[in-house]
Image 1 (cartoon, rainbow, N blue to C red):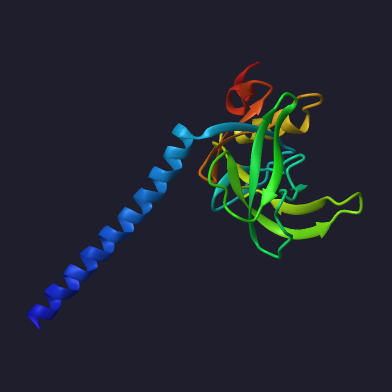
Image 2 (cartoon, helix red, strand yellow):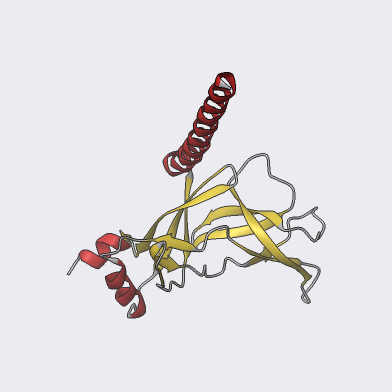
Length: 188
């Protein structure tokens, strides 16, 4: 009986250590992307709802980031995952194309594909997708002010500052013009 009790405590200890390691690895991956990832800016059409369990957040709808052409040499497949190749351009950052095979290099982001369709113009193929994130959480005290600014933002450009590395992405901040939203809200 004593031996069984010791074995159960040892098993419990191992289980606790495994849980802590899994959480720590997730945090380290997230922080690594924030530190080393390539920066991309995408225009957003924000809304600011409230979730009593998770707090204030901005629901993000990305402007011009829900469809892209299929990469040359790829065939349309009904898959739930794809890879959006990202590109810096003079007019702003864009999603250049979608691939179903993971690229070996370059800046890309794993996306959720929800429809593949043959476009009616020419021979191009269009893939419809959603980015893997749609929320940006904010501090409780500045969220109402941010909501007010975003609703009254006539002519103000709001962009999500994304960090991307190895197909994974993290929203670093929301930017109003060149200022982080949290600072923009606090300025008179």
